[in-house]
Amino acid sequence: MAWLDGKEAKVERSGGTINVYYGGSFYPDGHGHGHVKATGGPLGENIVYWRLPANEGGQVIVDNSWNTKNGNDLRDHMTGFY
Image 1: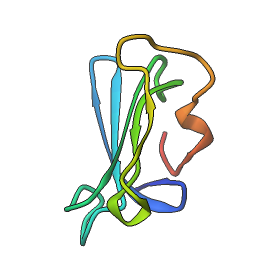
Image 2: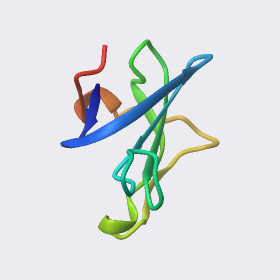
Image 3: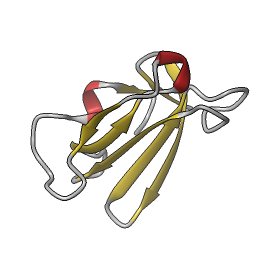
Image 4: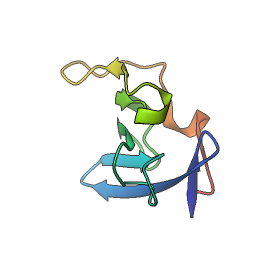
């Protein structure tokens, strides 16, 4: 089981991209979930997209979809994920 900033998370890996869903109703990827997309390395060193769950406002706080930038490291937020 993985956790993102203290919330249970569902993690999907696909070809160098990691998608993390968390904070949804009843399930990490349930209605109103937050979404983090990361690239680079086995644990997603570069966050390229981050939308907060609806219960935290639902804002997009990172959107580097077209230009991956260093400095937003998924590993700083995840626990229990290897």
